Image (tube, rainbow, N blue to C red; front, side, top):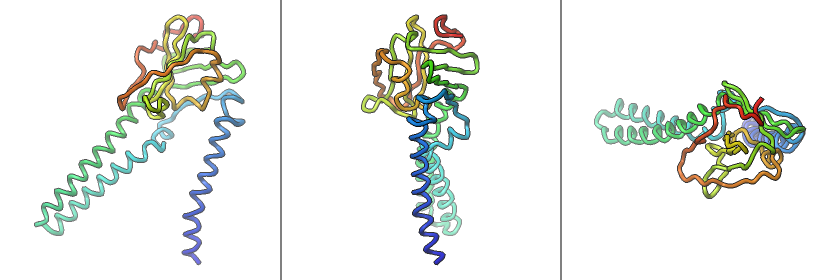
Length: 222
C-alpha cells in the first residue's frame, strides 16, 4: 500500500504542479494579473533568476562532472592499476563540468545586464518605464520611432539572450530583454509603431549603442 501511494505521488504531484503553473502563466500573461489588466513592475531577484529552468542543464552538467570526478577517484583508490579508467572518468569530468560552466557563464552575463533593471507596464496610459540604479525613462507610442526585435535568425525571440530595442524619435535607444516582456505586451503598449527583426547568429549578444539611462530624453524622461 505504501509503495502504491509513493508511486501515485510521483505521478500526480508533478502533474498537479504543472497544471498550477499553466494556470498561473495564463493569469499573468492574459488574465487579471497581466499587464493588459493592471499596472505591473517586473524585477528579477538573484534567487528567482538562478532558479530558472534555463539553468537546469548547467547545474546538471556540473553535477555530472563532479560525479565523474569522484567516480574516477574511487576507481584509482580501490584499483591503483586502473589508471586508464581514472583518466576516462577525469576526461568526462572535464568535459561535462566545462559545458556546465560555459552555460552558467552565459546566464551570469545576462544577470549582470538585468540585475538593476525594473520595467513598469502601465496598462491605463500604455506607458513603459525603464529603471536602473542611475535613473529611469518613460516611453509611450508617441516617443518611439521604431522597435527592433533582436534574436536568432530562425527564432528571433530567444528568452536567454533576446531583447527589444526602442528607437526614439530623437535617436535615443533603450533596450529591454525578453525576460521582462510578457507576451504581446509590446504590441499592446505601442500600437502602430513600426517593428523590424534584427537577426543574430552568435550564441551570445547584448544591446549595443544604448543611451545611458541617466541621459533622459526630454520627451520621454521624467
